[in-house]
Length: 216
Image (tube, rainbow, N blue to C red; front, side):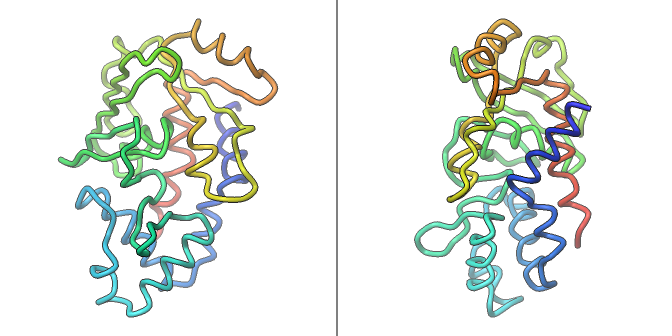
């Protein structure tokens, strides 16, 4: 199945679930605290909030960053934790009363399934800049009539063997306003690009990210 193959391919590039399973309990606890903080507080957990439960929190965050499980700023504070980021990116999520930013288009679709509740994704077509609004409830697309033509695209060639995926592949995971736009985008580099319907993209996001929630 196309979606299953895509999940496996992305997991090979960015093996978050595999790495989570291999973390020491203290590391996993810090990682999940950071991930859940975006949902609960609308932002990354601060080092000062993590240290009371683990005096080595700063060092653990650095270890997680080395594995590209999250990203840090120059002070060692969390900048991003897939699918969320503190950076002002084009993909935004209304979730649990908070306004958040996502690393990429697929990441923006993930939190509703991850946390089992409603979300609104606000973004734009990468080619035309036409506004995009996707209303989700878990894996269900609520405003189907408004997004019937929307596609998702990924440029697999953007993945970098070095550096953070947040600065490479994530910049090439995007929304495309309709089938014609998606086909034209795909044709530019058919060997490395792949497109999905919105429904497929939601399942792609769910398949990649929800396994992270089965811990802790």
